[in-house]
Length: 219
Image (tube, rainbow, N blue to C red; front, side, top):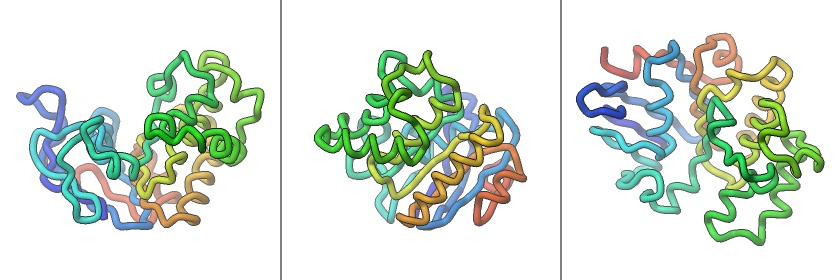
């Protein structure tokens, strides 16, 4: 279970963007979080992905309360969560070739020996050819780069996925392809998914249930 309880968070304690938010995601469930741009969804998603420390409230994974965020989170918890952001160019190191971008989490956790086989496996899954893997972010399209970012999110075989507006910058065919990749992975592993967005049609088709921002946070 991924549980966010009483989360207040932001970037200035005097004016938080999230106030008293509560959200629960069960194993294997796909939950859509729907809300307008600028309401605080992305901040809450970063808290759920253990990338942003809340000012108040608690995050628990499978009954274990998280006490550290970002690099201070225990590796055993950090590797349980895979995250895909809305803007791939802001989350990708421009110096890395795509194959190294995908392998980044393995190298960060001391599992370099797995990189070659896992990158090849996931590149095939997200439809990235070998020629694209040798390119850097500025040499590929947004859709191709987001494919690499999805592969990166899956490479540690996480039990939880946070997709924050993952398809907002993509065309319809790439959106369908990447949603299918995530759903195939979930079917194989039983991973839980938090999909954040502002498109009720997409979230309604993708997720088991959808909750509105106004239902999870205080006004």
